[in-house]
Image (tube, rainbow, N blue to C red; front, side, top):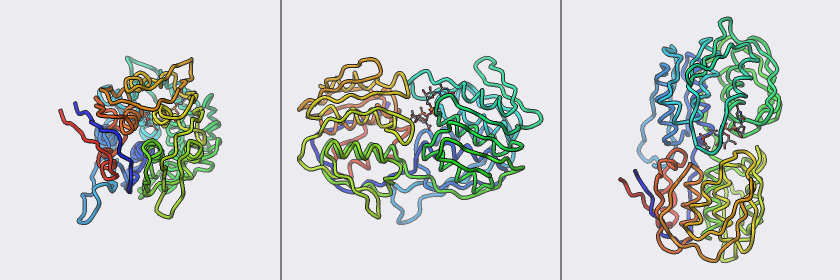
Length: 429
Ligand SMILES: CC(=O)N[C@H]1[C@@H](OP(=O)(O)OP(=O)(O)OC[C@H]2O[C@@H](n3ccc(=O)[nH]c3=O)[C@H](O)[C@@H]2O)O[C@H](CO)[C@@H](O)[C@@H]1O
Ligand SMILES: C=C(OP(=O)(O)O)C(=O)O
């Protein structure tokens, strides 16, 4: 298992290219199941989750090719995938594959809509909470599907096809919104999704589906209306910039000090986190090339945050923000409202000398002057990068083990940070 060694103390200066968003690329790839024509996706990040989803799609019969790297192309430029589901050869998504990545469960929507049946294993993914799938089941039932749970599989059938309906989610769910929106594109009549997720990745998926011939209104608002069509066709779509990667590097600069251009980053996808970072003392400006993040010798101000669905502060940046607050000049309170078990980084940050205690859904962080390097273990995707951020500001060496979590969602993290002066290296083994 690979680990990452970080020697703290260097400020970050330079340019970091921002990749396409993992959380947009995954549902976009799944959308290829909705048509027998080719869906071409550019700006796709090279990540373990993308590779795994490719395997899952191939198992359903999706032909897949990827454009090679061209002369003069930067190693960090995204790849272009061509996905063609001319014929769906298997409507089962097996446990061995789906258990490794939660988003792969979302194939249930397109498979059901196109093939009128699917058998999909209950999902896995980051162990950050119980993560049930009741909203998916109730939503697909509302569209007329029969659903049974058999031996760990969700078995869905709609022999006469799906029929549009009103789907009201009790709570905002990104994955359930993606899934019902995809399923409804091929249903008969109109579907209205109420209390839909407004995340930029939902808007990106809707834009791609529209380019494929779907009729969708309201993506990015809590009410989405989809008028079903008989068939969808091929399209070309570029994956939106990764707002979580953007926020992560912005927090790294806020932590170490320095001056970095996050190339291709979009401020409009991340306003709440940018506002909070400014309150901590970081200087963030929009430029035509992306976002410039700057912090000189000023200290880090403590700021309280509460995670919330978009446009609130993203739960996927909570761990990274906590790392930043460990060095703040005072106390901050970090409240997690989306997932009940998303504080696993706390005990690892404590190994570096952080002072944090948990009170229910709130972590109370008392900033310290010095963090000291230590061996730490990555417990999930965003927790792992929070340890890297802390390591960048710690005295001495930090070894982060189990970085396979990190590889799920951060494209060439060591390269990007090394280019800006960080002392960080991957140790294979
Ligand atoms: C691949 C991807 O895009 N993952 C993101 C997606 O995950 P994901 O789509 O899995 O997260 P959801 O938005 O569905 O989860 C939000 C909340 O709803 C609950 N819930 C969800 C579905 C359901 O059927 N029943 C239920 O109770 C969840 O347990 C959680 O408490 O959105 C999360 C919230 O922004 C992010 O942290 C993840 O990075
Ligand atoms: C929690 C995440 O991913 P997943 O939903 O795939 O577990 C994430 O991207 O932070």
